[in-house]
Image (cartoon, rainbow, N blue to C red; front, side, top):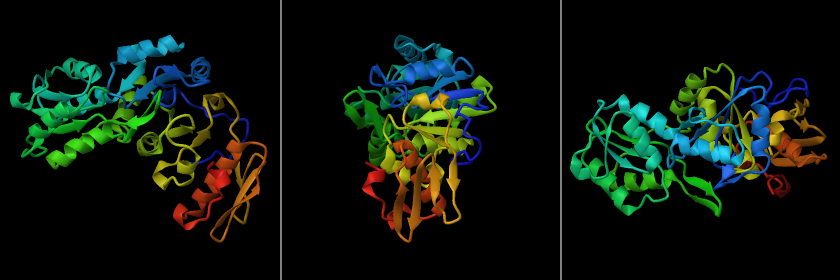
Length: 339
């Protein structure tokens, strides 16, 4: 997969794409509020390409997510929203019979999908559940986590499957970055001594669900996290955008490993409809993007030209570091590149 486009500067990230899949938290909104330029940019994209939404957040139903998106000004229906609970319930159906009693750790979004899948919901390990399914909700606390641990202790994966909607360590909310489902899953893991099957990003089940639902042949995924969004898109074999409005920023991009590097880097979603600059590599390995050039001399990452666009400077630095094949900890990186 190409890390940067190296053809004509006239192409945009949407060129040739038949489906845009946008993550939600950190891409479209933070808490209840839209991220600047996200709504108008996605509405503009929707004039020429199908737009869908994909989220690891298991706390709400697809209908409530779609309603929120409409309140922000997006044209969205529940069928446009692919959630990690939907992918998790599909995994669940592969491991236990329909109608089984399932211990649910999570909120209304997860309960709704489990019930729509034909299963019976319980909140107690004393009901002898056939499996445990776990997703994030703000109200999840010690009591629910303890019930999951009680249900899983002394049972193998085959005897009592444990499925997690996702394992995001953090989640962006209106007040900042908060613990995500990964921290809650880790608490159960510590008590039960087991690891779950995972349905959401960075696993491919949720991407396959989305691609099949929208019948896409050339999707583009937009996310704000390297370890879930971009890694998952790469595993699913689809192009990706890392937008710098959520969790991961310049410092994380520069250090991204080979499996977690996006196809495109955008400051905000206006870049979807703008020509994406080519990365041009000189014989000495120096990379130029726009008027910014970055080279690697020995162990030093050197800014040859800052250019007139900070984003192009970051793109050039990423390409130079990534193309070098060297680990970031072996390089001296100027603070200017990741401020």
